[in-house]
Length: 187
Image (cartoon, rainbow, N blue to C red):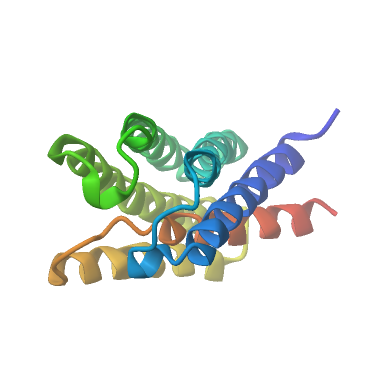
């Protein structure tokens, strides 16, 4: 049986791997330029990888909060994990309910609203986790600082930018870095 740190690391790293798979499918079909998926099955797989990434990252962040339970910042880590989990549920609902509609341009307003709430919650939640990592002294301080800067930076960018702010890649980079650091520390 795997230890808590190893399980945490695996969940966070697999979350990034699932995201990379869905993002690669999106890129290959020219999704950035508005390219349509070649089939409904392709779209279902692509978006399922994105949803799996959110679920795996949420699980990993909850486990990370457990890992920090005895450290300073435990309550902040738990609050961050719960906030990400709540936002994750919203975006998975938006993604799943939109599969019948096809491309994101066809999303109804309520699905976009759920995605926007997810983006804000994910960024704030991961910033809180960065702060908890700093307080908890479980990983090197640069990881906590990088997590804080990454998430606050993206939040500021989105506040200044108009248009689509739902870019799933943004929410899985720092959990991946944290997962790798936890895994390396476990060895």
